[in-house]
Length: 393
Image (cartoon, rainbow, N blue to C red):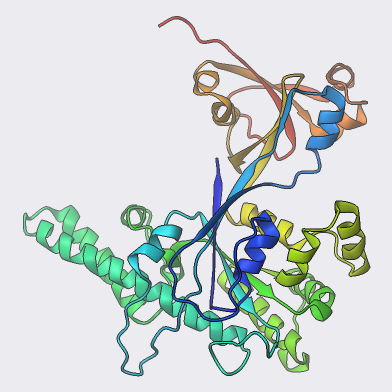
């Protein structure tokens, strides 16, 4: 399962700098607003500290990490807000770059820099988020209205299913006209079947990536952690950049969107340093890992994904499945024949394996290796070996 995250934001928000920090792709960074609809694409490995120790034990022919594709699209312009301008949303080419993304990373700038002009006259991440949400809503509105026209024609046949679909579409239309995201609506399971065909942008899981100045990065990360843990922060007691950061954190919690603080320009620089030097500098800031890595991890949480492992002399590999997947489904990630002929899974927790001296035999002797059947739910960090038999058809 390849996870795709679309990176969007206003011009000069730092999203391409973030893209470069994550992917080391070296995409050109513009210092001014641009109307291009071109996108940058890159596939990166998902950081997983478990793979190298396994590779050191098995000396496999290859080590394969799970991957994430990032799509960095051009800066989104300003949506009209009742000022008489035509409301259109994003272009078809722009939409084409992100409509298949599994999640959106919405980059919001919180730092002041006179050398990097903002499309507005001031820095206000909450206002910027409203503007971006309006663009996404207007784009979805155009999609829904096209579908309404098609469904109205089909409904003339008298088939009740088209009238039911029309009712759902008109509900979506009403919300989007008010610039409310589709994700805010409570829909029945049967109504959601219509949504799967529309690829609506305001329905996608999202994270808010706050691009902060380097000097507040440590404080911002600490603030976000405390608020995520449930601390009630008084916005009026926050000053300067931290006030905008706290405002988005509070909003994100209410909307079910995770919030990450990064300093995109700093991280782009750190990505060019030797790993040890970068880690040492992060430690001096009180940060355990790059914000780029945290973006990937948040993406996994947003989409309810976990990683299981396979390990042997041929390959050590990380595999991605949806949380709650049963053993046969996980086996199918490796090969459909293994799922079809699934018998059982030999499962050892990564921690148990390492605590047993890196030996499956020792883990089994301690009773830490289990045989699991078709109903077993795969857990993050399971090292699995699947037994299967595919008879002749």
